[in-house]
Image (tube, rainbow, N blue to C red; front, top):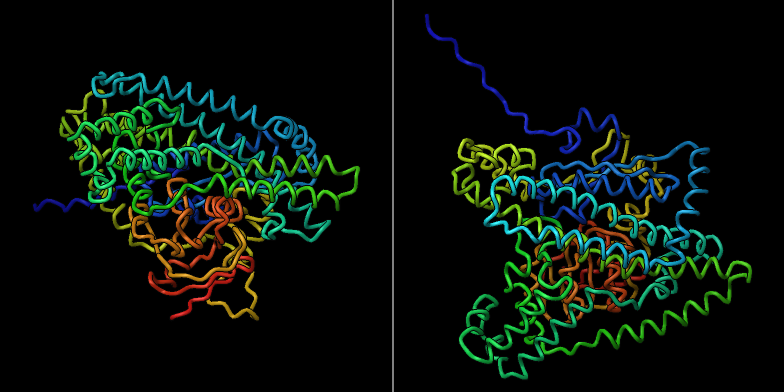
Length: 571
């Protein structure tokens, strides 16, 4: 008798509560909104697992600790390397009223001493990271690496708890203030007067930008200018090691990288593990030093910020004159706390995501090298195609396992995801508008509305614009568009270009000192692009949705940022 043909076995590579599974997740939450701010380009499986699990946890913790009246947190899922979010909405009026009372109580310490609370959290984070860095990952035993894997996850969880407490406190003050200024004075957060009250704040990112500029000036003083101008960043490192002056400069530079509280523990990419951090690849910050030298621009942000800060205080004083005496303290307190949203938005990225993810990359790559040496995976970087429970399972006896079938399959799917269109919404509602009305806006979630998903543009047909977004920083400007999809392509940006990109993260900040305007596909008035645009005084339009697909590099573009209007002048 001939043997029966065995049925084909399909591998169901989905994790409930992590990967988006339509038949489970859609009936439960009804609408899932694409998070283009954090998942362009697509995330690796290892990073997506961490983001979905622990970022979601941080949302829920902050909403509980601060008793956010209409939202108990977010659910996150990954689909084709992209993040989708849904919201646990509080719909019962009685429960909302009870939570509002607790919210006002929970917000008070942040109103009184935001800086002190954030300083304490920074100290805690640096202590956590210091302990993680103590392990010599390349000489650790397999058991030590197993424990390190779990310690990384525990630390990542705590980071997200801290991350969202400061963010929800400051951002909700912004949202509450806007609601009050709209009701009393017809003033939204897209109006220049509102934005002028929220600008001119220093933070650690700007301090590091200045330090890199100073290293560029030092290189010029030491007659090393040509080394930077005539070589690519990796070659600059080699050339510097070939002369006494070069070695002296490099030693000072690396001393800063290793002794500053952040220094070189800064990821190049904001949302993933698959690109190097500064200490691992000093060519990355060296490239920023080179850019400063090549562009020949002076560091004028401090003077710009001083001017903006002076205008901020004058605007606040003028605004408060309109406020009844009995409400001045309330309005001023909210203005001051809402203003922290700007500095905290940028600074927390350094002390939270960018720092710990550098340490996590270091640890996971060490595990990847161990697995690759034993033939468990093809190359150390393939560990980014695995998930933590899979790593834990094989790490003690890696030679006993062959995970190449899995990492190859996921690696191919991840590459394919770069070509796959990302639906902006997954819903069982009748329309996008219904999904927004029923499953987003009732959450009242400031991070969703003002940062990640963003408010929808409000076209003004009489202006006859080609594209519409929302105002991140007001102003009118005309220039040459430069479409940039990846960090590495920032080097193509020329002075006075208009930067067009999917979104902005802190690694992109220095380019704001070069461009005339910024247009992003994603984001809201509290996204990175909007905040940095206001600090640099650069007209910025966010949530233009199709800007990177409709605008081509080299085209002349006009921005009327106050109205969110974009004109393509040479179609």
